[in-house]
Length: 429
Image (cartoon, rainbow, N blue to C red):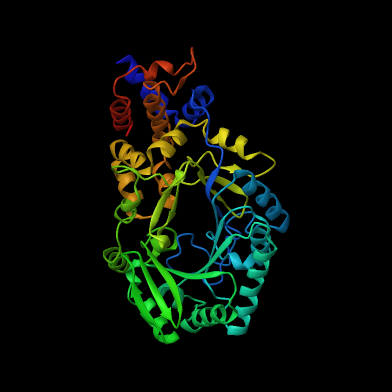
């Protein structure tokens, strides 16, 4: 009874408990990961298209005190990426990267990575001439890079982009495709969409281009125009961000036409029910999931960065002068990072399903791996409980523990930390 009372008190003072656990946590994992796998950079959180399904709810209204990376920021980001020795750079997310075109040029011309992928809405292709100018500038940046990375330009195309307040019309996509085909640059070209628009937007664009659609697998099609094959990858429909405000009937219709994120990623799992995006390169367009010992890192337009699907919401860092090794050490000072990186996000989801089934169900319903960890751990009491559980799971193999004499160490003296935390949270609710 005394122990359960102490646990309830600890979870009732969740923020203080979490801080005390992090301060006292010691691990024996050595060496820590020392390289990156994929590095995601969001040059801007703004977007002129403002799709109604946008997972970032991006418009031209700023959501933070720094809505875009500056050119000075870009130089620091390049140095950090290069120190991470990542295998791939993704320039995307948060908003429309072409709003910070000089940042794209800096990254493409300077990063030391084998592969670069630029994801854009393609609103800038209002004429074939303008599209050709911008694609040529990206290729010129690639040619200035002594490492000659493989660069893939991917345009997002779906019904929401086409019907957005400031739409990207089929003719804009056609302008971009025809510009790319006419230039003959060293840049590859592709498209990305969502599963509910499978066999719709790809067919519409193929018709506009005078081409045909070739089926590759359940994720991928190729639009064939002449001798060129333009890959288009279909991802799940996410009910996060702006999509949460869509009418219920529309969300239900889109959900029915889309796979769940668990089903979508299952072929890429390294073992039964285990997906760890933090330690692998997921590239559905290549139809492969390549295990890698590095870490996937996301860096936002406000210079905050984190291990993708491997960082609790209160452990984001802001890029300053720290080294990649220093940042990794900071992230792994949290036992939750060890759990997420080694066991994957589904393990966390299963744990939270025991602690707070409604929270877990709501988080999974969004169908979005990018927001899943933050959604699962958004409640301070759940976050503190998962921290205890993560430490407890590391004790038996001797990978981590609270330091001797730590005031909360006695809470770990149990055979079933998950059951104890579940009971304590149920009583407190």
